[in-house]
Image (cartoon, rainbow, N blue to C red):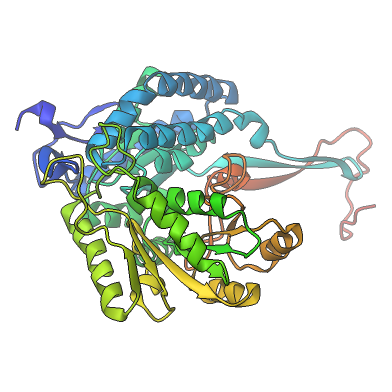
Length: 499
């Protein structure tokens, strides 16, 4: 393949020209065709990126807050100008429809805009005269080189949860995006350079487990941010912390939507379809389980099935409502869950396995699928599917629904649909989940709040972006200061007190 069909690494401000090595295929999910190849980093390539980031930190870590803000503001403007270009790359490599891809870029930009306020967010505290002539104040300083390992489902937004804040705080970054859809990261690297970010502050290496393991174990990497499945998140957290790194690892999800009998069922049906099948269900905040309090399940399911019948599945560049899944292997895995649900005895209301699509036959297609009468012991309920499969569990009461949600090992996101403010307030207090929507199906917080779940959905103590993001990417110092004057009183060997 020619150089225009090869995605290489971005190290020290330029495309990496190291020796050729292993490569992976990049597919167009709507056609099934291989469109480009991506270089897969060996350990030596990761070492080169970390070395570039280490060199850059010596100056970027001391850059003024004003300088950092100026670069961030320019990057924000360039990202806005090129949002459509980034969205097109996402659709071509991930498969989500263009409007969804553009929405992803927009949500990522919110974190860039939040990070532009770094001067305020990095302020310390100051206490004058804590003792005679003694002042105490606090500082927050950057960590150094940080690694970011991001998933395939949001190739622009998820990296932007982390790197704008890391860079605003004075760190340098090595990003390892998913090798399935790497091109958005490369365009963002070019935009950082155009914004005036010094070479080496933002680096991109592509790869698989070898690249991940080297980032986790490299002695010059101070922290790791990760988003992905729970088994890998647990591995990243344990491996990184054992290597002495600060780690935040966001894992998987099984998000429940509790529908009470007094809910607006038209709104609930719309929300279930939007949150269940947007981006082909490849969202960590997708609603995959409807917990419906009787006696409204039959009515709600009929409304949902009617809406599903109107969905247009096809190539995301043709105005479809839902695109393909990211790879053939992932499509087949999700299809296997549908087969398992049927075998387990769940009622298949809408079957997406043989749907007619507006796209080429070779695409990685699976249509929206709806199960009813799902029970907790079925794999379609207990496991994260990460595809367009929505399961309905019927319960007799609010309390039974709450207990079902709280007993699940995941605690990423949830929602309640009701017209009863008291019930909603009770739910937000009692549910053991990190992000909660009230008549909102995908409760993704704004950038100035933090994103992250509970239980097996998060490893580490710190969530993404918001104030917690700046806390993660900095470490504190406390300074106790006395400036002597002629009246300091001379030598005194007594124990110091705050008199």
